[in-house]
Length: 254
Image 1: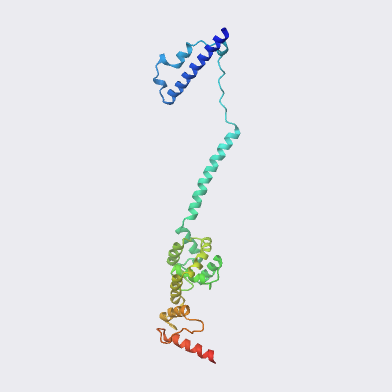
Image 2 (image 1 turned 90 degrees about the horizontal axis):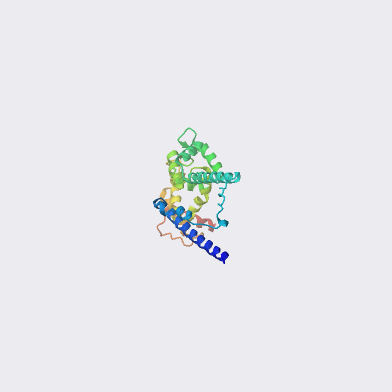
């Protein structure tokens, strides 16, 4: 009986202790423990409770775990990785952004001390981007730059055109070559480039063919069959094309 009474008393004390402990932590989280009066402080109640001998021994203080050398190295590596990722992200963003300064430096690699890329610089430029000077993609690039003379890119043309293409380096322009070739697949762009080529390719004011005739040749090549069977001699074609059709038919007959 004495044993049962002792166990009942122990359980009662432990239950009360757990309740007080819970209330104390709740007050602590609400920052109210300092406002609790001395008479109602949990430690006062603890001193009035008599515990059995088996529970009277103080629990040894819990030692805090000191961080090991491995923990220090792990934390240091984590900080270094975070700094590297931030730097790498900033570097990628910088590389992805068009730079007028880089574009200007790139221009003078081919222009030298001049403000224009001439024939010699143009030859090196074509070699660096991996295309022949007579490749049609160079015509498209010249059109994008709105270059006024064949074989020459001025500083203003370079900065304006390369800026529109977002190219400030040889590598970026190489990566844009497929796009420049694809422009020719658009009928509207092709027509604009064809018209541009007339003035771009002309090296003097002497006209063997005028611009209207040049543009009519494009329309002729798009609409007339190879055997010229659908050509209308009474149509609005220029005399130049009438003469060409007549010459072609005479040649086939002879």
